[in-house]
Image (tube, rainbow, N blue to C red; front, side, top):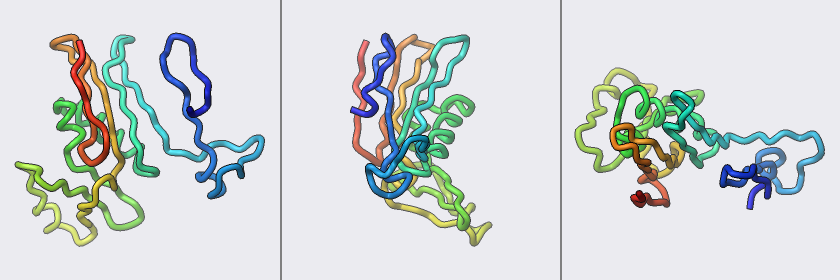
Length: 159
């Protein structure tokens, strides 16, 4: 159950991750250690109202995945489920990795590959972080959710 710490009225437990991120084995952390984790639960607000909340699993690719999904939803105005499903890009030392979703209609990435020999398509599921999100639909004033199709999870509608 994570840290077993919650703030009254918020409805969730705070997470805690030390173990394998520091020394490779659980129980190696000591007083003063700081978690070296990419866990990044993220909440966006507008006019003091939550408009988007998302988080992900996926190690060092979590911050990049969250950033790309949030940008597509908030700035490019894509529907939340589409913002999660669009291919993600990850740059490490080399090459640039681009997610290749099987069955993604209308997205032709062949021009990208013709212009660079430093790009690699990745067709493995869940390589780019596994994002789940909820957002406030401003038109209907309802919460909508989206689960990453590359991983476990689902979304149900509630009033």
